[in-house]
Structures are given as structure tokens and as C-alpha cells.
Amino acid sequence: MNKWSVFLSNVLLALCVCTYASDEKIIGNLKRVVDGDTIYLKTEANNSIKVRLAFIDAPELNQPFGNDAKAFLKKIEGQKVAIDVKTKDRYGRHIAILFHRNSEINLLMIENGYAWVYTNYLKYASMPRRNKYLYAESLAKENALGLWQTKDYIAPWEWRKHSRKGYKKN
Image (cartoon, rainbow, N blue to C red; front, top):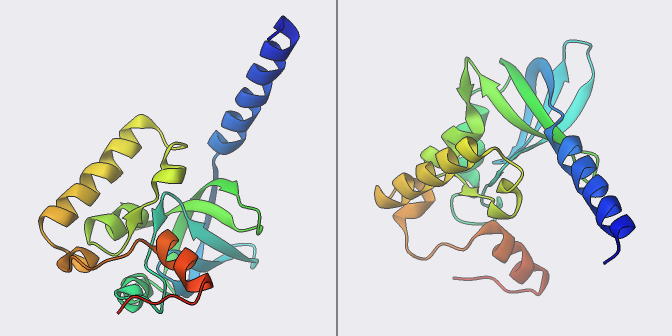
């Protein structure tokens, strides 16, 4: 690889990292819970934005514990929350960490067994946050919390892949 290619690769990598790391804080009310990892936020400017919770993947609604994950978030529906936006995805959703009364809700979802750590995207988190999420998931598994109560669980990304093929696990 020539020097120009190496330089260009490094610049592109830096842009990607900086884009993901550029946090934006938004305060509003949790307007609606779609499922265990997707919400609508009504901002203080009266805008409605769709938010996908960062670093986690909750069970789909038609999957075991999917409604439980949604119900956990619904406890704070209508209340004041804040999000720390990490980026936007290809669907235009804000990928963010959700906070309520100084609690990191994404992490609480993991700690209570309502979501998996979404390891494909965890690489964009800081090392301390990565470790915190992975440790929380291991404790939830060890204590058989939420979806970890059963040995017959399927990660949502696998569920979606098989569901598109018409497969449903009994």
C-alpha cells in the first residue's frame, strides 16, 4: 500500500470514529415505547424523534420476553428523559443512550435481563462502557434474570434472520 492510501485510510477511519463519538444531548419526554429498544421522544422544542437504544438488542415483540422488555420501558413512558445521541442509523433513527433520573436505561435493560449486549455495535463504545455492559450481561445470565431464565433463548438478530425465512422456534 502506498503512503497516499495509508493516509486516506487513516483519515476515513478518524472521520468514522469522530462521527460516532460526537455526542448530542437531547432532553424531552418519552412519548411512546415501540418495543424494548425503540422509543419516540418528544423534545423540548416539541419535535418527535425516533430513538434506537445504543449497544443493546431487546427481544422482538413476537419473541419470548419481547413484551416484558417493552413493559420495562413503558414504566417511564410520559416522563422526562434525556438521550445522549451517538449517531444516526440508515433509517434516520437517533442511536442513543437513554437516561431517566440519572439512571442509564440501556444498561438497566441489560442488568435486568431484558436485552442482550449488541456486540456488533459495542465496539463503538468506550472501553469502560463496554466492560460495564458485558459484566452486567454476565451477571444477569449468572442470576437467571429476565430472558436468561430459560436456556432456550435466541438472540434477536438470529430471530430476525430466521423469521425472514419463515422459521419460528417452539
